[in-house]
Length: 205
Image (cartoon, rainbow, N blue to C red):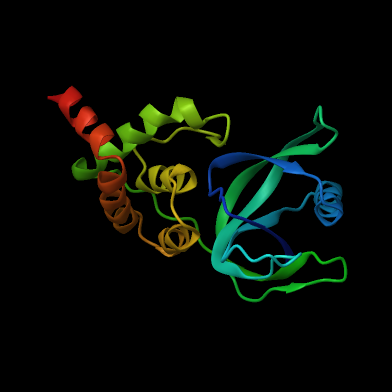
């Protein structure tokens, strides 16, 4: 299914289906975008920036992202607009270009929701790992409903919070099978968090 001219919000962070993400909005083009989304009860797409270009306006984005809806908004103490978005579904970017207000918009393909898969025994450690680190990151990114036994849900939550480059995050998002995604995430976590993983393993013995 294709939609016409969806606004994009390029970031070096990502929120995925089921995730809840606070944002601070200050640029006029994004303030206008948020106003229109609230007025029309529509969403926008968060995409990953492809590089750290010094251009005034980011146009180079990766081809996978997430369609989000605004679930809360308020005026922050510093005068900026604070919004909270919920990840609804994965999208594939088909085209993108700056509009007259220098807002990046384009066509997307909404990707089907992934089937739920029970996490296999070999990857239960990933669920426990996320549960352990969550208290320290919940002020940055959270979730609407916990589903620690669902392979897609755990994979999405780990992609959101792990310190990975945008290329790796995009590759993980692009995968259509939850177990294959966990296979890759398991390798990554074993490398980056070896001590923490060993501690979790020891606590189960």
